[in-house]
Image (cartoon, rainbow, N blue to C red; front, top):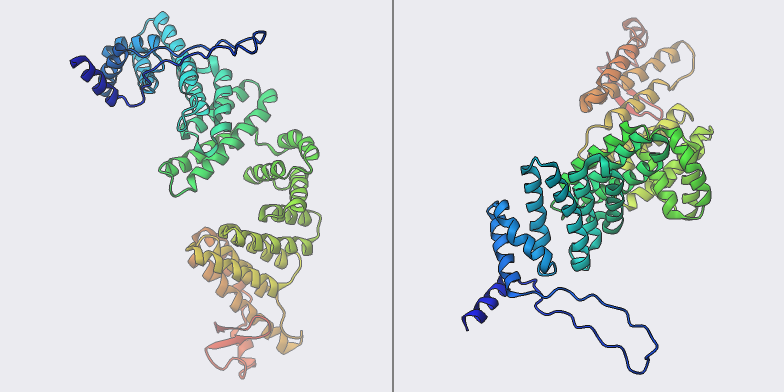
Length: 470
């Protein structure tokens, strides 16, 4: 009776235990000629297994890894299907013993055991809903890195890649980081042969990290954001991000996938991320994707393509599309960028100054809505430059003096730019110094007493602003 009570108590303490071996079904009598597949039975979970699980688990909790090893190894070898803690605790035990020994033979034994453990976990617990086979492959890849280092990077990368492909944005943050680390190391060994592999691995990991970082319900969102910065930096310094190298890899891929929206969008995002947006391959991917399903990114890519060809009217039209599409997705920082780009082309290339101001003011309003000062400065500078380029009056003696009043309005915008956005302070100060020299002189204002009778002046035309006389 006492033995029964003991078994029940231990079973309650270890709820994941399965206490009955699976029975092999006999072949149907009606089909004697048909071969019967041999099904390997799961090991029987004995009372001794249950007790040993409790023993090693308690020792691991107290960080007594040497004491834990004996009962753990007994369970691992005789009833490896008893409980998932065999593998979570086993990883800690093997790692601790590996670090504690200096014997090369023992280190090799423990390293092999660490890899074998993950294979066995896949066999017995690969269908676990929370930690399925793909998750365990990530653990196996990490074990290759931890126990073998560069000697097993190829095997590690294969496991990590398969894990991330299966788990997606549910991957462990460190599995995503290790995939890029390992892929980068392999690329350094063979830059010509492993560039495409690194690019693909980076894109997969970076996208998953970005998704995690943007999820407010994910408790690892902050860590994911920091690690995304890390992998972005690794990729940037790798050399694989070179635009010409990307073109070599993806020119044919774009042609082969001209109707594959998902692939085209991935390529376009990659080019945008590494700032290769002047590439013809990028343009081709954006244009093809835009025809299949317009997005703000594809519209922006088409805008860049049009600008490169000198068709600035078309570029602004594409930015109008990008603005609308980004607003639908609530991507307001992108909206502000698209509005600024449209403002720049209207000012710099089309000489449509009132249109340029409209886009610049819209970008400022978008950034103010987000509580961002950075980015507003460049918009105020665009408006100031538009004012400075405007001639409101005829080129007679009076008109030449009145035309100088636009510089008062222009300098107001440059002053505003440096006040609100320190990132443009140097540029704004330079413009203030340059254009202040063109203010109407005291003598010129004296010649027009009716126009300059007070302390302020209304700059008319499309500008329509009141400024201080100085």
